[in-house]
Structure formats: C-alpha cells, structure tokens
Image (tube, rainbow, N blue to C red; front, side, top):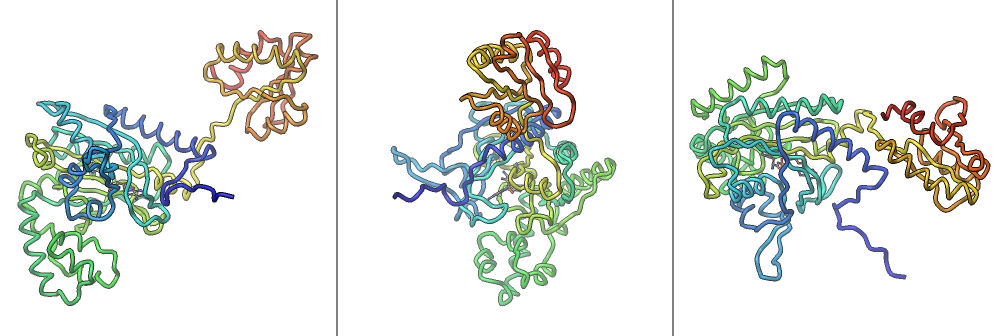
Length: 425
Ligand code: HAM
C-alpha cells in the first residue's frame, strides 16, 4: 500500500477542534487594531526575491538561510514571504499610499521561513502585523505599544514582559558598529564560530547570541546606548515618559537589536519565559529608512508583528479558556414526516434567528443514536421532531447541559423561545 502523504515538515494543519480558538484570537486582535483606526491591507504571499534581500538585509539569517526561494516558469526569482513589512512597504509605494499622508495598516496571514522546527517555531507560521507610516514622533511608538498591551488585556494574557531599546539613527549605529568591531577584534579568541563569521557581516547580531559561554564577553562589550545621537536619545526618553505616565511596565534592554536590518531608533519585544526557547510573542520597531532605501521619499515608519501560534500556546499555558463555537442546537429528526417537515422548519428557524448555530441530523438513526450525536456535538439543546410531533405540529426542546425540564412548543413558538434562551435576538 502506498505510504500516506504527509504535510511538509514545520507546516501544520489547523484542525476543526483548534480553529475556533484561532478565529477567536483573530477576531479579538482585529477588533483591537480596528478600534485604534487601523485598516486592513492584504498582500500576495509571494514577492520578488529582491524585495526581501533589499529590505530585510542580505546578511540576516532570514535572507541567508531561511527563505523559500524558487524560479517561476519565466525564470523570475520569487520568494514565499518570510514576513509582512517588506510586502506592505512595497504595496504602499506601488499604490501611492504614502504621498503626503499618514497610513495606519494591519494584515494577517501565513509567513514562511525554513527554520529548524521545534515547539513555537514553524516553517509556516501566522502573524498579525501592524504598520504605520508618516509619523516620526514617539507618540505613535507609544500608540503601538499601548495597542499590544490592550490586546493582552482583551485576551486575558498574562506573563509577557515588554522590552524596549533604541538603535539610534543609522549614522549613530555605524559609529557604534565601528567601536564594537574594534573591541571584539581584541577579544577574537573568545568568540564562537558564528560570532566570528558575523564580525564582518553583522556584528550587532553577536550581541543577540544565545551561547551561554559568550554572555560575559557580551556584557563587557561597548553598549549601544552610549553611542546614541541626541535626537534619538530624546525620542527614546519621551517614549519612556509616556509609558511611565500610562503605568505600563517595561525593561530597557540595551542588547535588544532585532534580527532584521531595517530597524532604526525604537525597537521592542514582548517576551515570556513560559514557552521555552521561543519566548518572543510580539516584536517590532521603527524603520524610518526603509521606504527611502527602496526608492521612495524619506518616510517615518513603525510596526510590529505577533506570532499567533506562540500567542495561542501562551494562552493555553495560562489556562485561558477559548470559545469552542459548539452548536446551540442539534435538530433530532425521526420518521418520514419528521425528517421532511424538520428540514423545511430548520430553514424557517435559520431565517428567524441569523445568529443561531444549529446542526440538523442528516442520515436518519434511532432517537438514541441521534441523542448521542447531539451530546457529542456540544450543543446546548436538542430540538426534537418525530412523526408524533409532526402530526401535532409541535417540537420538543430538550436542554442537554442542565437538568431543566423539556418544553413542548408549537413551531411558531420555537424562534422566540430559543432567541430568549440563547440571548440571540
Ligand atoms: P520577527 O521578529 O521576525 O519580526 O517576527 C515577529 C514574530 O513572529 C515573532 O516575535 C514570533 O512571535 C513570530 N515568529 C517569527 N518566526 C516564527 C516561526 N518560525 N515560527 C513561529 N512564529 C514565528 C517581523 O516579522 C517583523 N516584520 C515585525 C515588524 C513589523 N517590524 C516592523 N513591522
């Protein structure tokens, strides 16, 4: 027998038992971003490879080793998007959304990175991302961070810590980079292979190293905050002031540099120690230079993205109950008249109660087996129509989750009574 086909490693099915939690998460996040006036943009899943090389950076992990890149039938090099910011900027530039105007945008969907799969790290994963253009002050930085905190509040998510840092302007960072490389060269013997490789290409990422043997060296290295330009310093302290005023707790982490090259000034991450090694649930920052770098006019920009798989795992770890979207009603139909009248009645009921989730029993079965199915479906009520009821023009409404008495209702009474019981009107 042929071996059963399997999904690509690191790419998961989201099963019916899981999808209602996903929908709840997506609905809640959408409500929050829309409450702040952000509008949805939908971009293609595939872009020209050059876009990601020029925005994320040639010597980042993503571009060097994680992209799903292929030639299409015309010989063009295309890549499955590893993140949304580059596509969002490309779309805004191409469609003229950045001319003398501010934009507040969000998107959601799958992203693709050929990483080593483990808990919380997948090759196809899902982000909700937010990007704002045309606002250069610390107020929009604060808005972004407040919005993430509001998401956690709405979801009942606990245990995430906010870390922030400023990377300064690219000039300040270049000066820091020179100082850091000089210092690291003097300590080259203590560097691991990865760090030695990065010394030329991307020395700031050495600070991000997870190798415990590197930590004391990293702690002793020159610190980025000491090289910040005056304007970035003021911007950062104004942001901290707003967070303080709002009573939002944060840690300044001078080692936070982010893995993508486009950032400048404010960067932030929400991290947790409850998910093992993959503890960042949400991350972002300013990227004031990116639009210009891709050929547009200088445009202030900031954004973040959160990983839905990690967010769900953290909600589960915190014991947060997510709705299961079980049906309200299971329609038990028996006998020729019962089935015939029942299917017609079901349509009338659906028209009267648009919010009703009802499963009609199709395919017959004894009362006993239908009640078993009703119970398994998670429905709150069974609505029963057999030949006896059909002859009398009534239905039985039987509560499945409590000991309340069953009710005999005329077909006309059912919509109002169900609407009342389920608060659907
Ligand atoms: P990122 O840090 O690469 O930033 O990803 C953001 C979030 O996506 C991470 O914090 C994590 O929750 C989730 N994530 C990343 N890779 C994986 C993976 N392999 N498996 C599961 N979850 C993952 C960005 O993507 C930037 N575009 C964020 C941004 C928007 N910056 C400015 N605007």
